[in-house]
Amino acid sequence: MQIPDDWQPRKDLLNERVILVTGAGNGIGAAVAKSYAQYGATVILLDKVVRNLEQVYDTIESVSGVKPAIYPMNLEGASEKDYLDLAATIEKEFGRLDGLLHNAAMLGALIPIAHFESELWYKILQVNLNAPFLMTRSCLKLLQQSNDASVLFSSDSAGRQGKAYWGAYGISKAASENFMQVLADEIEANTSIRVNSFDPGPVATAFRSLAYPGENPERIARPEDVVAPYLYLMGPDSKGVTGKQFNL
Image 1 (cartoon, helix red, strand yellow):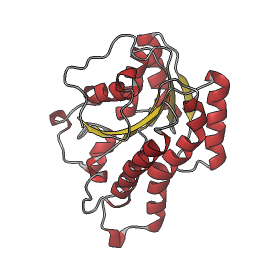
Image 2 (tube, helix red, strand yellow):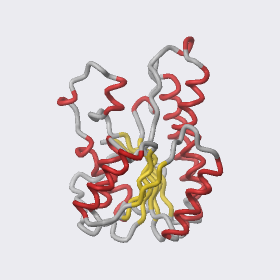
Image 3 (tube, one colour):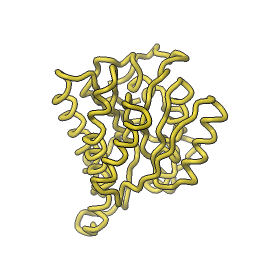
Image 4 (cartoon, one colour):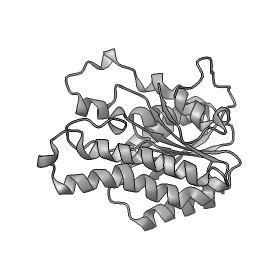
């Protein structure tokens, strides 16, 4: 699916909304977090590198005038308690959560399954699959406090069609798509929470360069070029749309 061709975000699209963005320190996560703040949201920036989060924080504050929040967290080593502590902090500071963007991801390595190291496999699944599960489950009550909440997964074509050598990354993304659909189906009838995924396609990020080191980044989209669907799917104009796979 795609968002409506003629859709344009209103200036107050995300006013007074509290949105948690993982992987907010750089790339797509940083661009989307800045865009959310530009349209009025209070953004909770989550990533493992504090320096990167501080840079995004400073940009948001100087450009939009809205003060975001920083929550450093290493998803690879986070325990169940860490996610419960995150939810408790959000509840204390904001009382609810209107949006959750699962954008953080770990690529690992593009190697055949026969040579895939088990430790690397576990790490990738921890970041790309277990972390979104634990975070979503911990934040569900906060999302239920919102009148119009959205959970959004950054997807990838490798998760929608299996490809040789994409190993744990591709499999974790495929599992995330199924997780999105299961969650959407479970909560559609009795909550105002919608759950969807979006595949932005090739985007010039440091993450992308790991997978395609010989690619010319000037020939593909920049992170800023793909924010519109993230806005649409997080804002009120997509209310009632759930369990869907979107692409650019």
